[in-house]
Length: 98
Image (cartoon, helix red, strand yellow):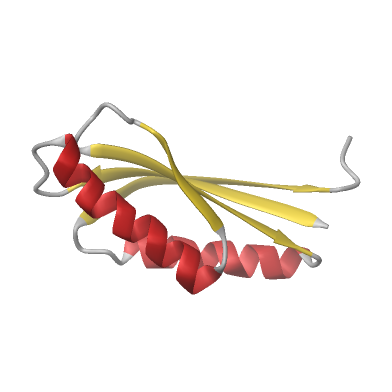
């Protein structure tokens, strides 16, 4: 079993409150869950209204499939016009890791 994760550091566009931030982040999280069948959550910068950290995780029997899914997730986030992708960090582990 392979576990792959990716964390995005995002700069949000014309956002001036935490309420407006939620109106950008929630649809992003919902779309990633639906389109790619991954677990997704806002994981950082919770008190900042123009920044967000969003993480996604995939579990797969195959390493290559996990990489492909995370590549697609990253492309999807990078192509959203309402935000700027500042950085993306990813990692992988296997059930054989100790």
